Length: 393
Image (cartoon, rainbow, N blue to C red):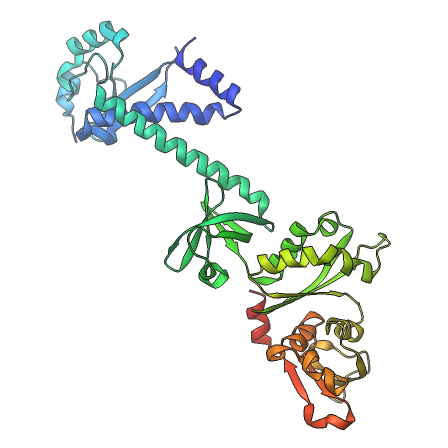
């Protein structure tokens, strides 16, 4: 078997690309030549010859590093196609021990045109250079292959280890390939060696981009942690999130027979184990799992997480002459009235509970009021359009 056949056999047994493996061998021989004759490093090229061996050539340019008269004197000119300045001539470099005869014939005929002394074989320096080139190319090829495999994981959650911070970004080891988690995407929360759970947001060229922000991350995380969501039995219908709290609205997949209450129970898990894992993965944020309702009023009430609502009022902020129809949550405010003792729970810390309930169903503002006897307890929670965009990442 010749060398090319051996390389092809190795590639087949390893399940690798023969073309790529052949390219690695060609480059290692070119690197060996460049190390042996460094002043001509950029002028070497390699290819496979008819016998399956690696052919090495040194190229010289007429009028630049090879005189036209010298080329003509050695019989390299063709009357039918005369040489001229700028033409390149390739001279075979016989670097293998079994090439003594052609090496001597070439020295006799074109020796004066070759600026190198061809050894009978490459030395240690060449072998070391070939090994370095081969090692580097294998590493690059492996990393490129791994990155390509991550294109199929865009939109899914991966787990890795924090390696280092560089220019504000955290670089995460995903098992032999690095990904970047920007500071604004959640990278500033980690130290070297920490376990990182993040969403593959994109693969751009050689870069894998991760994020821990936005609804897409929460949805993918729930699918990872909750079997009923991964299997499609339950679906995540809505997500609202701020720095310290997350609301996840769920429902049974159409035709599954799973009620909204059952969907919540499946996502919460026995003894709350799924919610506990979600809380850990979300950096300690409080996780509320609520039933989804297609009606934005009922949905917002359900999203207040168990607070009993006594009354509801919807104020549509559209022009008075707007067509009479169901209120548009995006341009409307909803006011819910609860018992005075429930106002604090309904609003939540820094207004998070009411604010996220509004975001979950698209209300411009959700206002919480105590009963008639506690008008002074009125509280308001709203989220501007700018803040909504920020929370979604």
